[in-house]
Image (cartoon, rainbow over all chains, first blue to last red; front, side):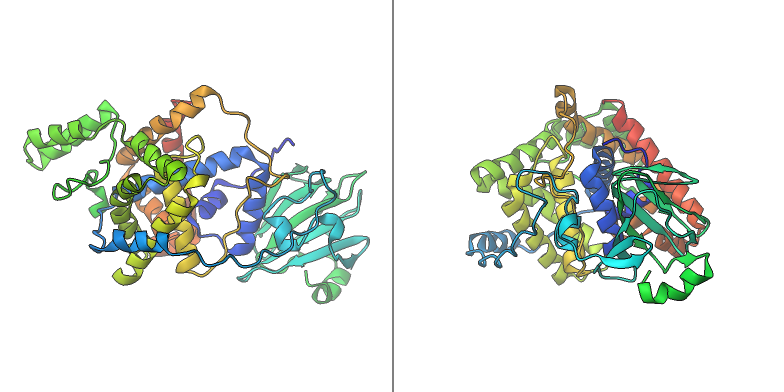
Length: 221
Length: 237
């Protein structure tokens, strides 16, 4: 996998500090699963956090704190909650297409999802997350356009299979696009393979075409 | 501002305290002496501190954490606790957490350090960085009650790092020393922005609001700070 488009440093830092909301963190974490380069960057940022922590004036803890901690360690662990059955992956021995943590969030690998039809051959799968943003998996048929749209906020797109391109470039598996209010774009899925991507939006997209705008509330995008 | 103070070291009243902080670079040492002079503290003290701060400190913390991981070594754990607990408490208190709650978060973090020690990999991060990430997650979990999705290193779809060479492996500890040096010389305005980001988990936009400066300024300060720190670390790669 050759990744050429990475999340911005701002986004990685917000992830490293813990400031990022769940849906955005999901997109960053899924990219990190695919991208050793960005993982290295995040580790360096975390090292900065640790370095800043080391420079704080220390605050003494309670006298019996260590004893308390030992007691907790020695206490029998609560029996772990029964693990949910692992979501089915593609087939034994083959690599799932969706990396963790995304696979758990959507409840399995691509082949097992209950896709919701969006029209024009496109499908989506909404992903429940806390906070105001929306995360969804999108499947755009090979060679087809996504309706031209602008943004009322930030949109993150992480390609997981296939590819798309718009006027800003070509995005293959693992590539990450951050689009803001200024970008009015019409992504096209590359030929041959359906493009599957994780999209996180801060606000509903603004579609240019009136007919799409009319059905937008029904589609939930 | 208190965070401009020179480095922390083990309080004299705690002879059993864990390893004092490492400042392995001669550069760092001279910086410290200089500061002490300014504050008219006798130079002997500075030299003594510099001398008693062994260069192996970062390695010692790593070794202690590995001893906990491999042998459930309680003496090593005590060393980790003495070193990290007062720092973790300061870190958690920076969120405006009351002392009792902070104490609770510190204890839970240390319990987690004990139980998760087996996952520590010194080739990936130093002990200090690893403990920091546990504290950060604890804060998100405990104080903000939110989820923080993370990649899973054991997932078959996970794309592993290229096998690190021997140079990379031994450079982690040096990296920590370089990092501290780089943070010390970072301009205060850049440090202030980083502190808001890491201590109060403020996103860029919130930092801009808090400091009353444009978002672009926040971004550029962070970018500059980060570039500077990375170039310091990068020299040993």
